[in-house]
Amino acid sequence: MKILVTGAAGFIGSHLSKNLLEKGYTVIGIDNMNDYYEVTLKQSRLGFLENTNFFFEKTDLEDQKKIKEIFNKYSPDVVVNLAAQAGVRYSIENPKAYIDSNIVGFANILEECRQHKVEQLIYASSSSVYGANESYPFSVHDNIDHPLSLYAATKKANELMAHTYSNLFNLPTTGLRFFTVYGPWGRPDMALFKFTKNIIENKPIDVYNNGDMLRDFTYVDDIVEAITRLVQKPAQPNKEWSGKKPDPATSFAPYKVYNIGNNSPVKLLDFIDAIEEKLGKKAIKNLMPLQPGDVPATYANVDDLYRDIEFKPKTSIKTGVSKFIDWYLDYYKVEL
Image (cartoon, rainbow, N blue to C red; front, side, top):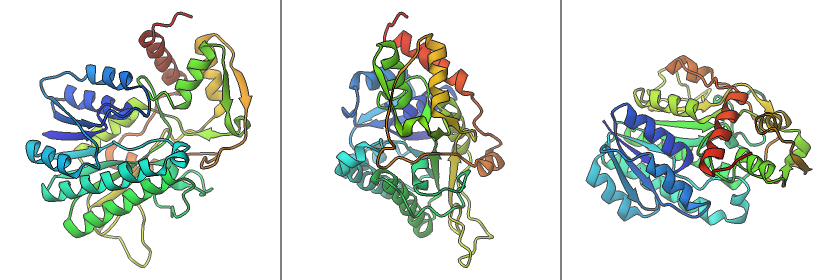
């Protein structure tokens, strides 16, 4: 089976591509290698994907001509779309980047999936779509009409766009709402990376909402395991779906949305404690208010995921943080 992975040089995309290659799949990776964060890190990730069954194409998703050429060249069986402009706060500074990549780019992927009759499209959504919701844990069967950032709005738009293609063209689509993914090879703009770097360098860390945040931190290997299982399980129509009581997570069309989270929210200060314990150093905390676009808590209901693929994330914070820091110290050649 040939699987096209967009964002293959990214955090989740590189981990997923490596796992798929180890399982014997052929992987076609797409990434634009942009400089949103250090390009050398992306190049290093590509380095561990060197394999006779890995093919890499550098391009932007919004380059319709190039995307069409790639689909024509490789004719993938399954597409996993992980490429996106990430980051809640950056979407306030640079909204166009989000429209270009997350809306225009995703439309190009959908259209090529339709034209090439791929077996299924799996794509990254985000826990940020829950926005102003305060009913915990967040359920895929809840309404999500009140996003708090443009990033969240683009992810909800992806789910809506996917549904139209499932409906019009019988294209199986599966949306994955990721909850605060962390682990080795993570992005430098993510909390764990920034906290670790600053604590090592004796610099303050910004702790938003005065530390009164809850996050359903999810280790990257758990995300990858869930996606890999879903590759073999395309979305199916829900025969019991009713337009009188519409279920947002399923459809009369081959469409499904899942949460992928640890189902165990952790206080931000406890997360910082785990970093401090591993490093043997205390953080200098700069307590700050809740930032625009941020939500105070995330908490995933993963019942649907467990029911359908008999798997739910389970890596503990202590284990996951330890593995990240081991990687960080090795990759950046840091001695404590």
